[in-house]
Amino acid sequence: MRMETVLEPEALVGTDTDFRAASLRVLEYLRSHVPMGFWSITRIENERQTYLVLGENDYGLPEGGSHPWDNSLCIRMVAGLGPRIAPVAGAVPAYAGAAVREAVPIGAYSGSPILDVDGSVFGVICGISPRPYEGPGPEAQPLIDLLSGLLTSVVRGERVRAEMERAQLMSFAERDRDPVTGLAQRRTWDMTLSNEQDRFGRLADPTCVLFLQARSASSSPDDVARRTASVLRAATTVTDVVVRLEDSYGVLLTNADEKRGLQVAESVIDRLTDLEVVGSVGVASWRPAEGPAAAVEEALAQLGADAAVHSRRSG
Image (cartoon, rainbow, N blue to C red; front, side, top):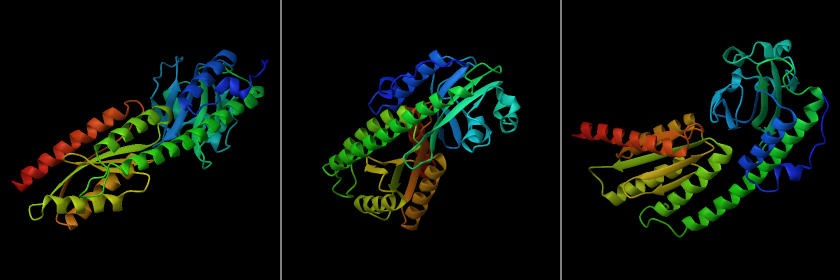
């Protein structure tokens, strides 16, 4: 396969820290120069490989869709069990038996990992075609590795940007404290959701939202609030955001999959029970295919249902 001249990195990806915008430019370049039936920037999270950025493709797969990471060709590529470019995927033993090939026909494969700041796999530039030889040959590997390296640099920029935004948020939260619990309040919550929803649209970092209501027949509302705040602080990390809302508490668990969200919810309820406080909780993970707003609504619905159950029991 004859390769064309590769553009300068800054001309292709840009110098900003918007991972989605950079990914769109990378995919546009790949479709133009090394077309395949499917090119996507994928994200590895919650043990799934999600099509984070994706356009039209021969498979009719939607952006935000996913499949189990363990079933993928990419997990085998990352582990070094197969080549990054396989014009005949079925001829590579590690790829031939991958479970994803039972779901969709994969004749040709291309991939290159995108790394996070700690060296872990953030995602993969992934290309597949239904038929063999529909895609780049091995000589294109330096190009695709260059593009994944550029996206790795953008991820690092995103992480720096996130730290700056978090520092600004903490500074704002210091001026938005509830006088009883010392927790931040509604304005901090609204700002947090806005920032994290924007970032989730670019990176799809694992995130959970949790809502909590707490009450006790034997203690004053202020005493219950102080106990609840203490429990929430103990159950969360410094990067999580915990706030007191009008009649409930909101928690945004960052870098948290659904399993951790449920563990935190269970821990909070158990600790409140030990303090003779009745807690009702709702928790949901943010999913790329549905977006953060759907998870917020789901957690609130769970909270309402859980509170109703406790109310009936106490009645």
